[in-house]
Length: 405
Ligand code: FAD
Ligand code: DHB
Image (cartoon, protein in one colour):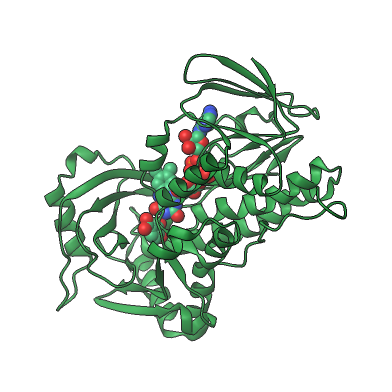
């Protein structure tokens, strides 16, 4: 079946879904295809922290009803090392900036619900997605829908929002992209637990057995992570072993880690990856399709949202004959991407135990941690990177001609 849309979107993660909504606010049609089912997308456990700018973006796009009711505003984090737990006060250090704990799954649920209410074209459970004719002004999106019917959609442009393992970045001819990549010699074992958090704000813990993070999802649900080896067999980690290791890495006199039933358990590899430019012809990459950060700085989801805040007005302009914002898209995003890539690498290498390194490496980490909590300048640098930099708010449609469009 041959059809037509303005923007073809590959991928129904936060980047693709928010892009389809921001485009709809501008009166731009899109078709979004996603290989997974709606249930799978809404259940997949991933990130949990929204920067101030991401919250402002979702609010300005009229997507924050539930976020404003259920999101938990945090004004800092704890850094734990060498037997001490020290608070980094974001509000004080940044003139009032905060982050909001609101799970990626909830952002995705809100976006899917809104797109379906607004009559958006979302196709879940597709197979054999292909993109073609990317260097023409009529690129093609092909896919097979859940009933087995093959579709070919002629588009004005295609957004590759299909994550690190998607098909869009590999569809760019060899030699066009420059890539930078770093794999880390560790991974995170993450659990979701049906137990109230044992802390009021997130705890990032440096420990000789490896890093640990205490996060949360709600007043009754905790999210915790342990540094493990990248080839770790999750079968070797029964719940009792996970809780014992978490309790040991967070140990502090007078403080107890509350334990409860484990609802979800998974292992995530850690990688830094950047590919540039984020555009080839009429294909635009956004989010994890173009760049990956290790999760320690809580940046991946925020970068994905920030990319499409820039992409939506750029595509709108392109459709109206103004090429300039589309030409500027990649450079505009990469500035933020590299800042987050550096911050995530810095947090990761300061807090994890790197196998094969010596005591000197540990002492350098501890010195950096002491400096970070002891110097207002160093703490401010962490705080402003963690809470994030302002995002271009794109929900207000640009008027191309006077009067209604
Ligand atoms: P994704 O969310 O990956 O969305 C891409 C979508 O494209 C997916 O739904 C996928 O199914 C779909 N897709 C792929 N191929 C195709 C195809 N051929 N056709 C159609 N659809 C396709 N960040 C943090 O900050 N903290 C964390 O704790 C954290 N944990 C993570 C755990 C895991 C396992 C992963 C993979 C990432 C994690 N991240 C975390 C990163 C964060 O979740 C991502 O940065 C964020 O999801 C990026 O959003 P996105 O929309 O760009 O990509
Ligand atoms: C969460 C994940 C992170 O990577 C992080 O740095 C903070 C919180 C989370 O899943 O809650």
